[in-house]
Amino acid sequence: MTEPLTFTFAVDGAIPNSPLPLLVYRDAVPADPAKIEHLFAANRWPPAWRDGVHTFHHFHSNAHEVLGVARGEATVLFGGPNGTELTVKAGDVVVVPAGVGHCNQRQTPDLLIVGGYPDNARRPDMHRCRAGDQGVLAAANVSNVAMPPADPVAGEAGPLKRLWGA
Image (cartoon, rainbow, N blue to C red; front, side, top):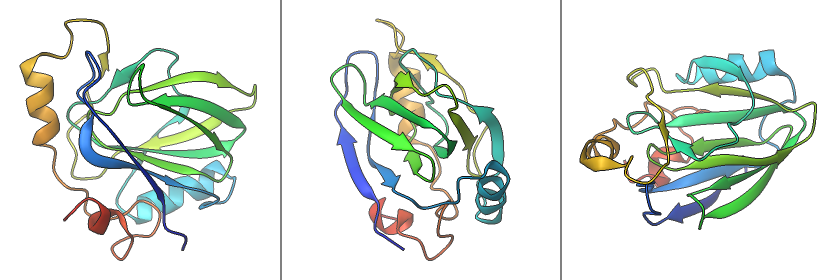
């Protein structure tokens, strides 16, 4: 398995972000939604939805999220308006730590992403990153989110726990 790319982001306005790095696994999964769902479920990140990425800045304060690109390509701005644009394509997986903003900038018409959350996570909330939305509660939630039980791509032996300091 190839080591994932890592990105960290500072607080950006209404987006708390996280000291944990965003992980980007290139060409890590088959470009097939059912196979991605099976892999995520086997690694304790049950798939929760099939869709795209919202076109507005948002974050989840109480859950980490995995995005498996099954079809197409998208350019997503991670970390808020001053963050980093990354292009992801079929076969890529992104692990988004709780609190890290993400916003779809553009996509191909065929984009399909499988999203999921660790099986030890609470039902994910969603904060639209407007001025004044962050609040103390959202920032506190981010720092209290449980460590996932496994890496969504490589399972218990995967790099997530090492890269996230668990």
